[in-house]
Image 1 (cartoon, helix red, strand yellow):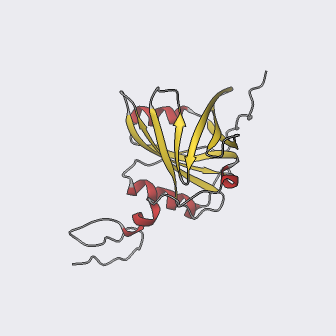
Image 2 (cartoon, rainbow, N blue to C red):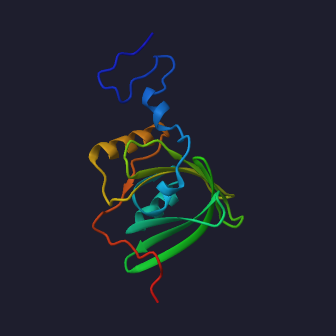
Image 3 (spheres, rainbow, N blue to C red):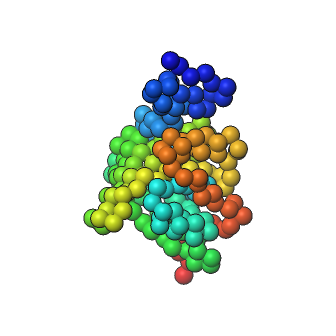
Length: 187
């Protein structure tokens, strides 16, 4: 027996097997990601986590900027995340191993951080799915990054649909009026 859909976003495959059709596309990792597409500055537009203390920590940041740059090794990129807390900028640097659309952060054996780049119809966006595992935390995180500070409403709706597929809470949406930190610490 099949359900009838008035809105195509969350049409169910069948009454007995309720998997949203749209999720098949939205949770699927990209086949590959061109390294040149990743390079440069990205602003965090929105994010959601299934770990409440980490979600609270995300809310404390005024803005988050991420920089990706190529390294001397073809399968490794340099990743810098810059968190703004008021007038303070926190710079975090990591090497990230990339294999097609999957990645692994080198965080010095403190915890495991792996993930993948997911589908998005937004031409200047990235959707990153992180899986964080440690002795104190196991979470799935989804982040929407863009070259812009804000995305169109349809792009945010698509990201919100991805969150629903992963059963993640309503996202923390960055305030686009908050200043981003510079790429390099100021002396």
